[in-house]
Length: 131
Image (cartoon, rainbow, N blue to C red; front, top):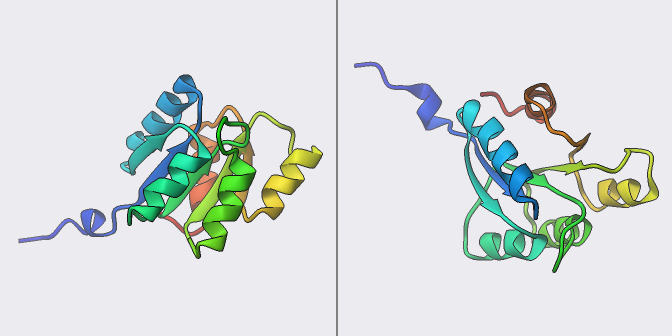
């Protein structure tokens, strides 16, 4: 009997965004690629879910959120030793000062919204996560 090797190497992702619309879009894009994913509404929830022992291969992190923004959350996760691939996804231009601070906080990649299937695949290939 052949084993499904894809199931053995299942990629998991965390979507961190305060917008319900973006949450749904990012969740569906990941799901369409066969990536199991969980959604949280701000950076503090992202930190909390990691504190509870969960681990993700990929984190899609919005920059502008209430309670704890993406910059603070990325710094906190990196300080906790989280090695997951963190991709910033924001409506800010990649040339803005805020975006540079976001990238320097510990991002592995940065994409401007809207996130498309092509942009998501580019993130996955850049960090050697293959679906």
